[in-house]
Amino acid sequence: MTPRRAAAETADRRRGLGRWHRLPIVLRLVLAVAVTMSLVLSGAAGLVYWRVQQALDEQLDADLATYSHNLRNDLLAGHRLSGPDGSAYQILTPQGRIIEASDLVRTQHLLTGSDITSIAGGAAIRRDIGGLASLDPHTLRLKAQQVQLPGRTVIAVAAVRRGHRDEALRELLAQLAIAMGITLIAASYVGYRTARAALDPVERYRRRAASLADGASAVRLPVPEDRDDELTRLGHTLNEMLERLEAASERERRFLADASHELRTPLSLLRAELDVALHRPRPAAELTATLRSVDSEVQRLIDLTNALLDLEQLGGTDQLARSPIDLPTLIASAVDPYRAAAAREHRTISVDAAPGIVDVDAHWIHPAIGNLIDNALRHSGGDIRVTATADDGRLQLTVTDQGPGFPADFLPKAFDRFARAEASRTSPGSGLGLAFVAGVAASHGGTARAHNTGQGAAVSVDIPC
Image (cartoon, rainbow, N blue to C red; front, side):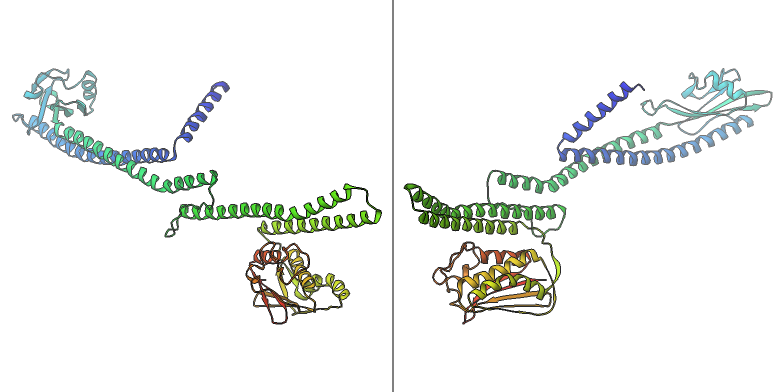
């Protein structure tokens, strides 16, 4: 085969496969079922036909052998030649001339010249006259052999009709064809209904997902709850993916809304300060005060932006980098940076951390504890106490202060973004500290709770470790 011809055949095969793969899945499944069932049914029909044909031929050959034997004996005994119903005979000379024959084959030459030559050499001939497709009722199966009579040699041809055998086989073929056709149609229909039943959920998923592309919100695939097959598990997986996508989209919308809302005020203040400073010439002291105010607002913008980015990064964290760490060491490393600030206000930060090892992400736990201590320093006037224990695989962390506590109406929304207890806490802040603490707890699979102790406010974090 030349390279050009081989390349052309390869291209033809690829085009054929491409056309096959462009067909709908249901049609491909039905065609595959139809072809498979055709092969199976053809094999089964062929086996049945072969077994029936073999049984009929064995019976026919037995009848022919008996008749040929009787014909030979009658010739040797000089009896009048006859045979059972449906049989025929011919007696020929070695040259092939008919000496005697039954009425059915009196003028018909049953043997060919080559047959006569073979018989003269001592062979016995057995063959059929007429085919299965022939509707002639006088189709025959014959056996010819040489018979040595006193004083001469003849060829005796014994034949039996194959009509009943051929008719039975033709009827069997017709019945098998009908049965195969009905079975193939039924199998194709069952295959089609099965394929449709299997793929209908996929089509429903596709239509529902298309509504998500059109901008619909809170889209969930119609997954039955009472099943546990491959498509149902696929539906649950897709629903989980949709929930994550919706959560990510909600985080993005909330981030943009929060950022635009919280950045508007400091930017407006910056613009106002600069406008006033540029409105007319100012003394150096006044310009210095303006620059200090601008620096304060810029720092506030930086802190706010960092807090928002930390919250967004925390919300998008799919897997924390947990690692074993000594609990007292973890708490000390988070608290120590704030001791100097507390000392300047003549306050103390006491730590009660039980010995133990916890499996947490220190990268997020450190700033969470820092936010709690910073809040206590900002909004209370007494000492601060940090307690931490690790029992039964859970880390219990509590920061308490000595102050007025949380207002009752603030507690339900204490961990919301930008929530501030303005009635009792007048120090500046972004309102993101407790939201960040709640996010760290949730990312570890735990919870955060705010409550009053009667002597001040307390925030507790409970996470598995």
